[in-house]
Image 1 (tube, one colour):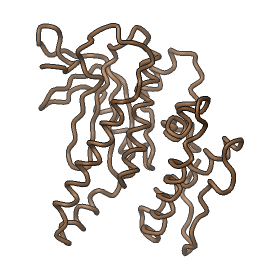
Image 2 (cartoon, one colour):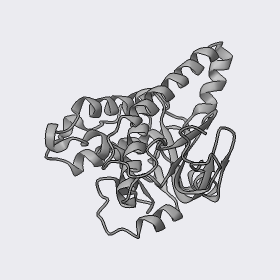
Image 3 (cartoon, rainbow, N blue to C red):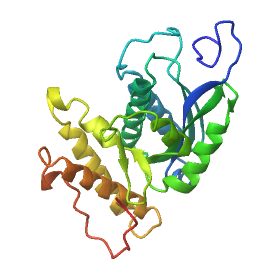
Image 4 (tube, rainbow, N blue to C red):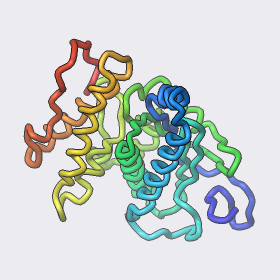
Length: 273
């Protein structure tokens, strides 16, 4: 199939070692049920379609860490989406340096997560590594099952965590990934998407303050919208993540960049970083 990296030069399907991301849109079921009751389902469909076009389109524009040395005509990933579930396969075949490829994929997922927030959708997910195959109808491999299980049981909050196989893959390298990954208070490692989006051009241009302020405003709006509901703790997690990011980079950010929780009834805090 033209451009599909999971087909060889002869057009035959093949399993390829891949990073697999399984992603869920938070609160999507309730959103669709409300749109159905209000007669706005078509509008919601268009909004999601535009969010996908924007998020995946922007992710393609991220420059690669080095020129591709193999399979010049292949895409960087294959994606399948069903309602609120998104599965992405990133075959590890594009560069002579697998570590550089791992970093690029984490960067692409960082931009995808932030861009979905721009369009009003908070996501959570998990990534795994394993032999995988994807075509127009089929997404096959144990890595998808592992990523799905990790998303269902470990991600919990709006974060993309690393499943066991992804952690095992990471341990073969000796680099410091503090600019890509972060450790949460519950011990799970997750993609540090603010680091890769807000500080992606730190040396050349400094932080993207406008994007950080958008992130701040998004959190405040969601905390107000979901006050008193089970979803509130998910946005409280983003608040804590945002503020810890600002504190970690205090040379750039001060109290004006932090989220100050709006006046809300007392709600027990979730377990947050």
